[in-house]
Amino acid sequence: MHPMLNIAVRAARRAGSIINRASLGGADLQVRAKQVNDFVTQVDRAAEQAVIETIRKAYPDHAFLAEESGASGEAEHQWIVDPLDGTTNFIHGFPQYAVSVALRHRGALAHGVVYDPARNELFTASKGGGAFLNDRRIRVSKCTKLQDALVGTGFPFKELERVDLYLKQLRILMASTSGIRRAGAAALDLAYVACGRLDAFWEMGLSAWDMAAGALLIQEAGGLVGGMRGEQDYMESGDICAATPKLFPALLEALSPAR
Image 1: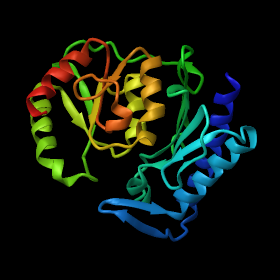
Image 2: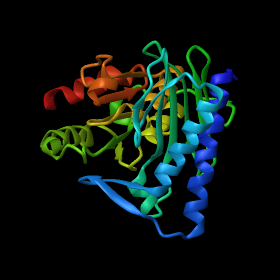
Image 3: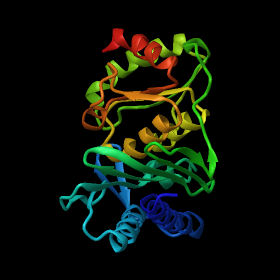
């Protein structure tokens, strides 16, 4: 394992321990709304602090882009951190949430970790080194037809003005796939595409920390990732599609009437 990926794993596991202690301890959560339908707890902040402290101890000159504390520093290496993706699920005791840590080097994703503390599932990837789940190599599914695909999605809950557009997309894919799933943690959804539990995924209005690690996982597992037209600016636009190589064009084509 690359030394930088090893540090990312250590940071993600440390954050996961904080999350698990909070979920099992029955402590009262201090919940604050950042905006409509977007929440943060003291657990998010503590987990993010643990990730940043762990990485900064090893790489003090690196920059960060984190959900709760924002951007800090300027460097060729930038760590992209979501300390608790799926906070609303966590608040309600719904065990579908994860820690996401990615490293971007000179603008390109180099390493990624998605850690599910509730299931102790660790997804890792390094550019050119493949993708793994608990040290076992993973690949995207062999699904080739959209009509046979199980597709993940997420509601545009931060951008309610796009709900009508999303409902058009949902209507199309409900009629042209074998099923749609919305679990509420994009980082895990992307990891599930990487390991074949989902055949494809799409969502609008995400942030870089929601997508970075999961996107690299999919690419290293043999899948394709892009924007709603297949463009590669999804980290900036926040709109993402991901699928197996043969499903990806079909997914884009199916969504095209609703663009």
